[in-house]
Length: 383
Length: 155
Figure 1: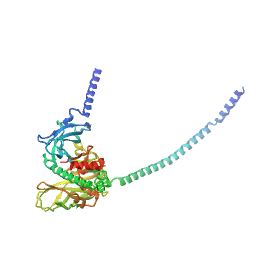
Figure 2: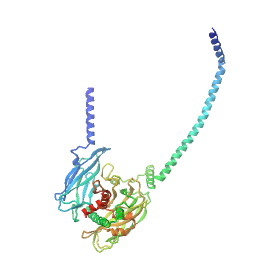
Figure 3: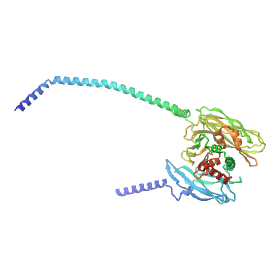
Figure 4: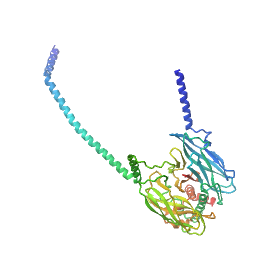
């Protein structure tokens, strides 16, 4: 009787142990089900291969942590070269949260393939009712080299991809000119070597929801404009409440300087920290509904908290605003030229921030790895 | 024979030495009392000195802590902590927001709650900035030289 009881308990413990072990180790057969790819039949890109790498599932308290490292290869099945794309990422258990992965600065010819990485963590209660897949991945927008686009564009990514592409062309032309005139010092300055800090700045951001702290005394800050002479819409001033490292309720007044109809624009924010370093803290798209209005006040009820990468609060020293791009009613997009950026400020660090683009980041890496020869070859390939 | 005689003499002498037992007892008691009194005096002296030393050490550590706090912890964090403590001691309910959060961490952007969240990861060297009214983006060049931009939206 006693031995039977012991055997029963042992069996139960072994079963529970095996189940616990199974929960911490991913089942290879179920791994692909964590991600669901959704491409429409007429999609210009299609999934060629997909691997999950070192993805794991772990128990954390009463939740399960899925650490997903996906690498998928897509093929351009359209007839035009692909310049960039945005993939939408939806976590099914999180109705309030979605994400995206954008790959700009592409030159993918028809029939060619290219990789896209997606690294993420999903934390969900163990007791949550399981769905066959946890994350849906689909195409939001694909931009071709002729600036035509395909996709549902639910994330406003077409406009962003067009701006990236125009910035990429601007940067390539500018760097090619520096190479042509053998302006090596300028080239070094442009690709970071002449600047005091080569390492990218480390920034922490948090959107503050709910009631704001009433303890921190907020001060009214003026938002000073950075004006590009050729901009069809220009900032003329603004303000915000600043409490320590929090910026609350910013607003900017804009003035139209062109007769062309404007559909939307993107307003950029420059933040100066307590060490007098200025950087672009972010940008906000603004839709202009009334084309005839000559001036408009853009306000936002959002509040943001800034910190350094290590989490130390970053005290706000000053705020500036600039118009990053403007989309006209006919769909054409304006971005500032290099001459306009140089003219707008004499501060080399701020100038670098304003001209900083994904393409510049990519070309800077090539320059550092392969030197002027590598950069020249890359510019020949892409220009 | 000689040895026996010497032994008897010595024993007799020792016996004679402790023959005044009551005197010896008084002397011993006196010595013990003196020793105990001396010990008590020393103990009092030592304990008061130890207390002073302990208080001085605690004061030194406290001063060091206050100095360290003042020079290393930003006023922002101090004020937040004091507010939280004041709320906890006064019993007032602080209006803490318990809805979804959206923030960047050194290796990713998180949206959701402590139990249910989505984090899109990026290298610590990524350039992070706000994207739109409720989004955070991170931009980096990966190992293959390709630029990748990840965005996480709060709404």
